[in-house]
Length: 366
Image (cartoon, rainbow, N blue to C red; front, top):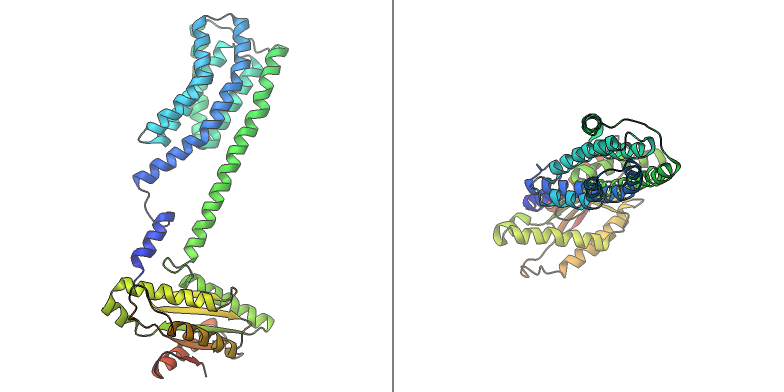
């Protein structure tokens, strides 16, 4: 078939039935890291204040203040740069999340497990870990945080006191309220993008890669649905099977590129002539099919007459000497048909009748 390469390339662009390349894996990991950049930056910035309010009371050394400023305001940007410059951004971002969990445990230990700032820290880290890696990453992160708390308390000889002052509680509240909203907004945006991507993939799987009309599999589903609806609601419909005349000769004489242009040209002429509600499909090669709902055979013949006239005056830009024409088989739905394949077979027989009668014509099933 002429469109083998075009078709596979089109699907490869959308990632359908194609193995993921190293470049695709990198870009996917980069998107993953980018999604976490905003929540981490905003979350750590607002966490600075409740943690700082506790450290003021604990009277810690100045080094801890430098570490707190670096963690809250520098680390989010450093984490992004590490992931963006890594050969595997996804793996690097998972490492960053584990570092987040360990550092959160250190600050919880330094605060003596002060209840409100601790709750804010645990909530933020838990959402990040669960939202990106599920229970497995959450479990390992929770273990790291717990170990970091224990080690910090041992090294600093800290004593858990759990209580929070009104100021510490007040400063922790924005984290507890704002961070879930930020995380939910990022999740919503990601879900919206994934839904759109899925919609495009589904659409791509229903279309012919070269012409953009329905592919054979989907067109047959539409035909079966139309057949059942027409029989149920006693509606009329007509289908057409169309072949490009002497297409093999065009391919053999002018090459497959010209053959591709001929297929696309016929598709465009059909789309320009037929109604928007008429369902055009490509069965492969040079064969097209059309479902015309609520249409009599006479109306279908009249539409095809206009296509014949358009093609008579049409010249391919790549090969002006090539004259395009089509043979068409028309089959109205009849009460005697018990399966949609009978309907399609009737149109196919009419097509061969048109070919045997000299081509460049439309014939109706008997």
